[in-house]
Length: 399
Image (cartoon, rainbow, N blue to C red):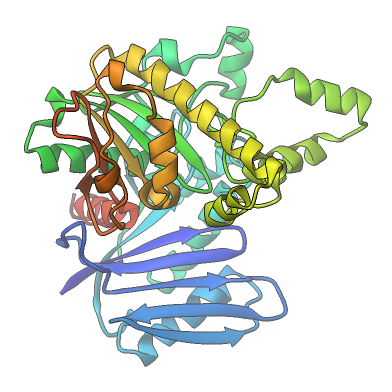
């Protein structure tokens, strides 16, 4: 069986999957795992193979050591690189800038081009590069392919992509809307077309990727025409720990009046804001429990979250003109029925009717949650970015 190894390398963790690119969307990966707490005194590797979980705890000083230990653990359970046929390695890369509109076969030159984009994604691209460099050393004879989070949004029309900032400054420093979660938005929009048995070009879809990080996209005929995230993944919807859209003057105000440094403000807006900043938690199960117990901060945080979600939904309905389908995906989108219900409440006049019984069904694959007479269909479709990356990796490796 020919498999693709999918790597998602973060600053202190590495997620990995061995995927059969011929899998159906609902199929489990051949193996999956997580290397976490890299650089801490004791790290942890979790490997899942055929329903069984295996755990290794050991010092993991860096990404190289973590990936080698993960491969050793995979070898022990008969799914390591020396025991299975890995035909390609797909690497998730967060930021492709304006340089990359499609996946790329990784060469030394491509690595340096990704490195040049670090100023646009200082928290993500360095870790992505670490994963690429380590994996290329360990698997030097296997093609490696970079798949960019921003790729799907590369062709945004200028009206959606450009900010109203001095054009010379914008050009020199790469200031524009890039969008993120592109692999997920592209995947679920394509799955929607498959489920409806219609060509993607005939459908206008609003995709809602709601997780700890959250974004929305307007997809017209298979092509993204707008998205909520911007130059960075900080913009747009209220998220687990990120502000989403905020008056940029807040940055100046905090710098001048609170004496906060740029790094402190960056940390505040990325890690200490959003739902957690308002309520103290960023897990929607905890948030719901707090609301049920009468916590006013949790209720306020939830209302801010839903308000911003509905604001983007309305704007994308206007941007598309005709909407055929609204799709919810990712952790919150797939599992929090109350979020879907409240996001679409009272929109019957616009042709959106949610069926409460369908909406309450457990997350067991793609499902329709709108009524039969709803003009706009509403679906929950689990995302599978790893499968999408695996397919890209094999396709571009062969090419």
